[in-house]
Image (cartoon, rainbow, N blue to C red):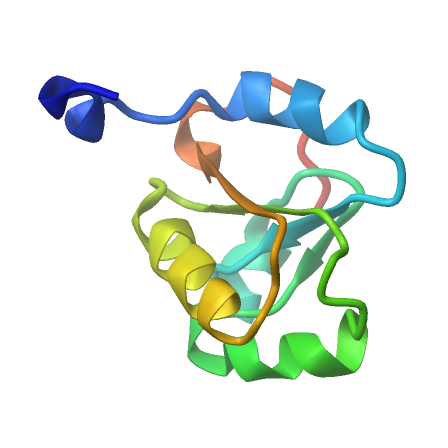
Length: 106
């Protein structure tokens, strides 16, 4: 990965294809509950960045593949670091829903 790769946004649409290809993977939305209610990607679960420690109640197996998104990709990047610090071993930031081109549930 080069220096300028740090500034390139994640492609959430590609990230979702990757998520769907992994059996047993979890799609995690780390936006606030209010943001989640306004529209979220189908099959995602919502645990906000502010309460990320609650992931332990939902996903006890720390080897579960987690695909994390937020609005722009910033909070999901923070969440990935926190989740890895909690011992989760297979965590991917797929970016932000702001560039998502698929169906949204309300």
